[in-house]
Length: 374
Image (cartoon, rainbow, N blue to C red; front, side):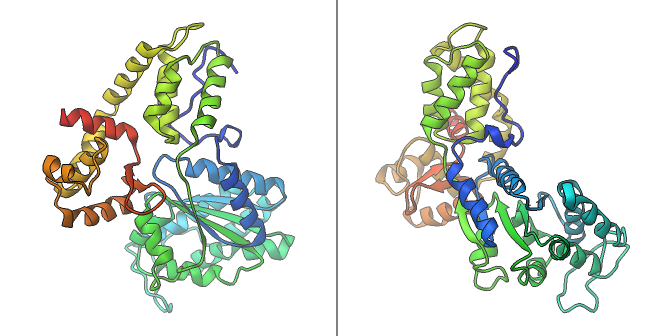
């Protein structure tokens, strides 16, 4: 490791060797994949979901299983699903599986638009070049063809899977119709960062994927693991995390990306060979909050009045069901649960062990809200 370079990455998924405190989850997901049991991984935004998927796929790859990663973030139409599957499969399969997968994909017509005319499932597609569902079906059946060729189960990760809900009616139904028979050929890892939409897809009895995947939820990282990782990387680059590290852990409360963001900034504020103290930490925190003020304001503006009141209570440590919450923030007892469910579904807050004990997922947003309240 070069001592002059900041070792803390916060703006993109990290490589599997740098994954912190996710051994239990990665082992569980890899075991489920080998057994042929689908899983759904739900985590708040910036909680290391994609990094964990990469670790699981790397572990399965070392076992000789063909693996693929497909990111559905931002899709708007069913044709986009075809495009993402095409690109994800082309980029992912390698080794002895790559040529076969590439040949199969190339055998399909290159257009990514399609029509559901004549199909049993109706999907609305707004593209000029319309074609049959054959392309999507062939892509979804690719693991079957791979298995026929190799006899090895494939592991497919669909990231930001909740985006299917907005990309066209019955897409999840069509997908299930293709993968439900792939009992030997493939295991699917469905991952999403919107808890409410993931529950809608997998926990609503009216949805085709109801009960089709074992739920796995990512929680905050353990302080001890974060402490060791950050302290070690300071030391390896010729700096001492000092007393700033304890303050950092108190602020980020286990949030993976926020921990790396703060560690990155504290490292920048620490001179080579120096010790990061309280003054260094305060400068780092002030700088991070200032840098993200515009994003925090945008997040605040999209909340309705009731949700803002609940967020304010949680940010200041006031129990949302308490008399103080009613007197200080004007929270009506009857509106608390509706706001809480809405914010839980959107991933703004999370429950600590279930029940009605909630906390803000982004601790830095909480600091900004407290500064807003004065």
